[in-house]
Length: 238
Image 1: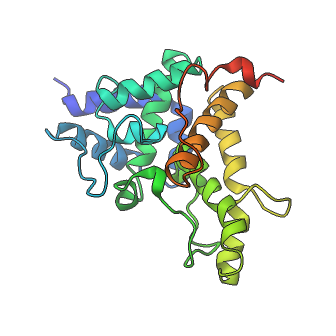
Image 2: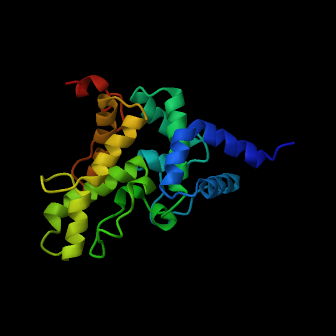
Image 3: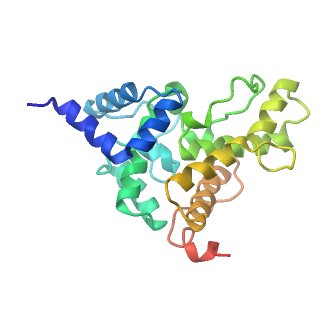
């Protein structure tokens, strides 16, 4: 009889799809190790409750973070993940495939960083250089938006205090000025295109994820995000 762990691995690979699995492997991610980590975590009775500075809830977590925190699409975080993406009119198979792909990515690198609340993470700092920026393939969709948001903020907030190398890193990651490379914004567009998202779905995801950082990281507003109103695709049609 086949090992249950191996059966579950096969299920994850089927949900993600051979093309996405190969892309992750080609980008240097040890897929088998990532899957093993995921399955081990799912075996833990307590799950992921290691955050010391904040208690994650469905109201203060980014969408990819929900996948990271969940033990499956059936638990509280998994159900919220499904609810949000369903509001964007993604199909069930698209949601399941993306869920497993994001869990693979989140289990591969930056474990320590991912244990803190994602919406409050800083990706760009005084020690940043073009060489130590994370590869887009190492980041989930929410993290790709977060590093872009962080760099955009640093363009205006930190330009006078950053070293030349850190400033170069900011200009690579940002997308808010003409001279920026927008590395992660381009990576986001390419990934959601591969996933089969429409322009309206992409805009809805960005609006709500950027809205979370604006609310919980920068304190710009106190609006509720990921509602039927904020994800209504009709508002994004051109």
